Length: 252
Image (cartoon, rainbow, N blue to C red; front, side, top):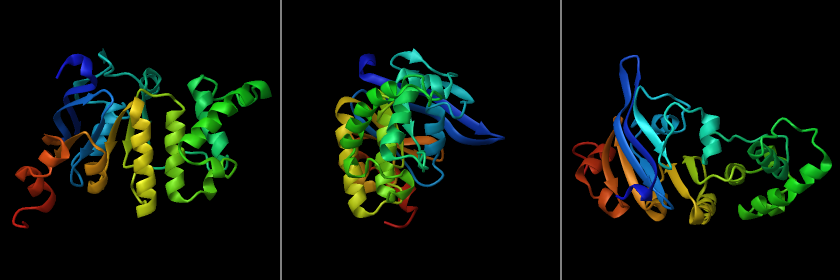
């Protein structure tokens, strides 16, 4: 793989917690403008891996490069400013602000104005236009003035994606975007991910295999903290090691 194709590259990524190795010597290369899924059975180390890539956890050893730049040891905020933004598994929106206001806060953060709530109306009005564009992009125009707390769960996920998009990331990390969603919402959020991936790169941790099969260009399978297999879904899903990791020995 040519170096210029890779937007994110991790090599030898390892995380040890008091003698327990949660992630062991993981090499991961994510190509620009692709949707890459990180999957694996429970306890495989997927979320730990995500936390290492965004430096919510510091690796015990290994190196992470984003756009050819070594970001190992950089703060989560610095990494977000470089264009690598993460949407959280647990909804990270302000419950008592409206949908539009939530997106506007995220836009203020992008401008370094997150605590300037007393900014002139003119500055905030200028952000409103962009906020409403993002609200429309994720299909929430009809609830733009509704409080986030009143949104159904699936629409909260869409709002969370809008607030992540407000940071204008080159690459988005989505942590279980389908968790807890019903079938209709899964379809809607899958379509949204496909849309936002048109001009950026997406890395997602996801349990829903039909979503992974449908959306992903490349899949990396983790088991017990190590990479078990990597490739397109058609190849990975037939790999005997992957089948065994998911199903367990002697179950087909």
